[in-house]
Every structure is written in C-alpha cells, then in structure tokens.
Image 1 (cartoon, rainbow, N blue to C red):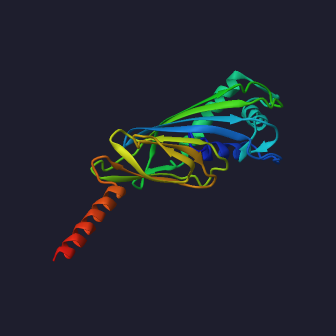
Image 2 (image 1 turned 90 degrees about the vertical axis):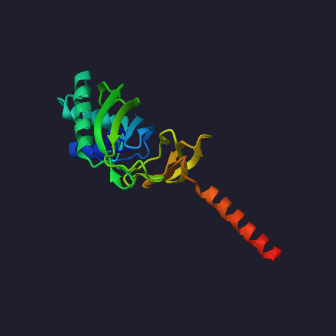
Image 3 (image 1 turned 30 degrees about the horizontal axis):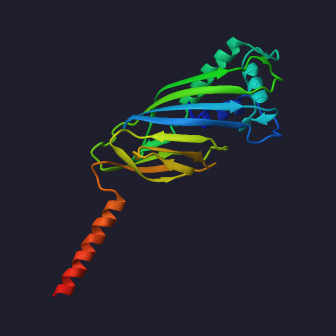
Length: 238
C-alpha cells in the first residue's frame, strides 16, 4: 500500500532512508483498503495494515523491523516508547505527503487534503515479533473533473505494491461500474456502485464507470440487435 492510507511508497522509502538490513522473510504484510467516493472529485481512503514476524526489510517490513525503525528514529536504546511511536507517525505522514498521489480520475492526478496515520501495539523491545497494526486515512481531491461526462475512468497505480490485500471501492450514488481490471476475485454489488476483491501485486487498478443516465455497453448491444432484427424483417417483407 502506498501514500498515506496505502502506506507503501512513502513508508517503504522511509524504511530505506532509516536503515537497510538483509531480509529472510517475504509477505509479512497483510491488510485491507476501502475507498469511498463522496463525489467525483473527493474520495476517502482508509486502510489497515498488519505487520508481523521477524527479520524483514524496507520493502517487506516485519513487526520486528518496524519496531527497530521506530526506535532508530527515537533514542536507539532498544525499547520503543509511546512518544517514539507518535514521532514516527508524524514522520510517516510527512513522508507520504511528499509522494505523488497514485490515484487519477479521467487522467487528473489526485491531491492529498489530509493524511492521518495511527500505529498500535508497537511499544516494547525491538526484538518483539508480536503483530503491529497500522491504521491510516487519507482524503484525496481531484480538481477540474468534468461531472457532465457520461463515463469516467478511475485508476490506482499499483506497480510498487509488493503484496496482496483486500480492496473495496465505492463510487458515488448515481453511477454504475462498467469494467474492472487489476482486481482478483472481484464482485460488484447489486446497485453497481461497489467492487470488492483482492489486489494483484505490481498491477494497476483501472475501473470504468458511468452515470446511470447514460446507456451501458449491454444496452447498446440490445438496441443494435433490435435494429438489425427490424432491418432483416423489413427486407423479408419487400
């Protein structure tokens, strides 16, 4: 996950800046992410990430690695305190805000309105491998989105994602999803607004959706089929 709620590029870059250690583990991260569109121009992204295990690296941080990084930015005494966690949260927010937003709407790159990160269960010895939970919330705005367009394309760049997580994206009322790429095991809600599934590592997500007032592809096919049938029937009658 990247940038604020995604907590990927920003946090991974932060880890790399802090220290580089060998890794003996992979896929220590797990979590989920929820996108809720308040309008075409405004989205709230919420994520929960779980860090567990030992060893790890900046690109695949375990809970042990994360505790070491927090203490490294603190006093380096081998123990993580609550104040060190607070400082690390601030550091992550600053690092994430420096990254380019990974979301676009109709080709317009989003801008961060706010980034809030909360780290739980991280205090104690840096050798502790108990699970750490990181919650984050980001508000993103897209300027100059043309709401009069009948269809739109939302894109989430995921080429830096190194693990799979649960994904949920809900579009505003009055819109229906047409096509989805970059999400495995996807399911679309009965009202057509929400897609759920799992991300695909190192793969972008692209969703095409439209206003309920505009005809979908299936409707266009039906109209064309009816027109062809009427044409064929007229030809037979003459």
